[in-house]
Image 1 (cartoon, helix red, strand yellow):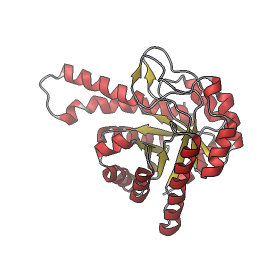
Image 2 (tube, one colour):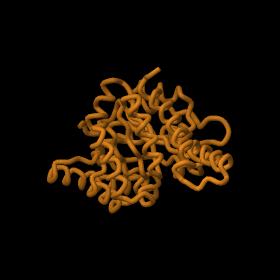
Image 3 (cartoon, helix red, strand yellow):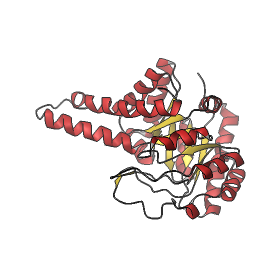
Length: 293
């Protein structure tokens, strides 16, 4: 079975991107896996701190590993948005394929310091145990929640003068040694209630991608126009995060099931439509990310 690093290198060669989808429940996990398997493309499951606490920190990685082993399929798990070295360490120790230290709201120097600590620990474990956890760093604040928004998150870096600069990106990646890098390039976490989210700055993404020795990642993919993905992937974007759109589809389908079946109490029956709804969202995104018509 290929590793996440190998899957990323293959995506780079094919000029496609790996879809990263956040989940909170096992039915969402199956929906994401079913979609990826039907299209025969690799996929990453994301679980933020609160999501993996809800599922179970070790249970989440074991669930994904069990699917990977049973179906011999390239499905990976990422410890998404992690806010301390201790919790990144926890994910590395448990065998997550990747982990993000999110220091986007910290001063640059402190963000670099803790991110490097995470990278150094991951490399030490990899050398000792012959298994690898990729470490991602994040530079530039784009909001912090996956929900429907009536306004741009306060303090989000979406204006041209607020985006991650090439100079800061170079310093960050060089001093931390991260494998994956998420800059602020105009996207936001969450999804606007009306219309589309702000477009990403393709020029800034391209400038950063050319300057760095790290794989670029896009957070805040929900709510973006399709052209943002196709243009971003064309200039080197390799991983795209989707969360809010999954939550919206899941909740709408569940509300419909509850309304149409007021006497039903079996969760697996009530959630059947939610699984289908999530599959539809994931399938559409994976086709887009992988150039499948």
